[in-house]
Figure 1 (cartoon, one colour):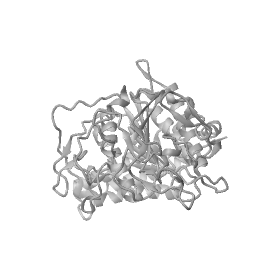
Figure 2 (cartoon, rainbow, N blue to C red):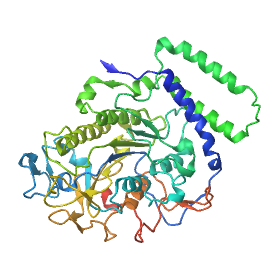
Figure 3 (tube, rainbow, N blue to C red):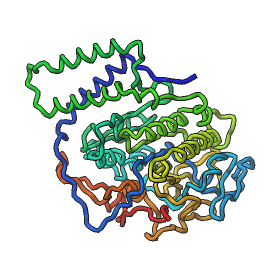
Length: 456
């Protein structure tokens, strides 16, 4: 039995409303000027990126930077798997077998400890500026923009797709709506881009009526740029709806669903695999995996959601996606995993040592761990280290001799995808240059760089 999304009248109207919302973006409908600094050589080892976001902030010392103490549940089954890596194998039985493709960066820090601000920072790699919230694009939107000239005529999928995000997701900013994320929902009420065979003739009639109405002259003489913008939105949506590949891309086989964990996150990983395998225009996929904010009862198995449940959900979905991408050939002897950089992290770490009075862990910005795989990453290693309780970074693990920050993670994504992270766009709507990465964070100056040791 397979799950196959279908097109509803309500969703067709929703697609139309997206087109109309393009009017709000008209001040940004201009040709952007992008300039870069000399002597920067992006790595270009990947063609795609999958960004796995652990909303709420995963406890690094209970996951990928495991610290044993009197707080540690005995059933974590902690094992030393490589000279550098120990894992709670009861929580990550599948990832424990895929460490050959994974690097754990244990010297990350963040600038923020409040969820909204920290989530924004992780997706945009810039501090929040209330005056520029609508102007600063997310990393995914920048990637989509940078790959605009590499799209083929046969590409029908948007360059940036996200899954299971909410309305507060950072978007395309000054780059324009065509580079924003198409957000898909795998929780049961997701988007429908497949027209059932029995509805196809009626759908084609309605499209013909819509196109005929669009061809009529406007009584208000709408200027050409907005008309072109709306036509582009409509054309993109119809291209997906008409593609014979969409049913296969959105198909969720029962066997796959079980193997990936039978969860919304697992299904988002299946769809990410299918989308990348189709090679039909998508370059950046963001997967949202929430529920990691355990201020209380972090280890309590009687709770519907606890540390065990979120870890196992992540383990099944992420490990199976890595395994499947490695099996899909890309060309030239490479696999799809070889050309897909996977980045997995939350917005910050959690308080170290003993659990709190509420038997949980609070927000902690001074230490966290990021997981990196594929896209040229040389796996089987860990870089950086924290102290015995996981409170502070004591070994940075790279040439900068400082902790790794969100700006460096973004620079790594850009570099792997062949994007010069020193670029800036000078003619933004506000008149202030948008730098892909700023060398001044909210509290410090940084020599921003890709995380070179990830690649060996």
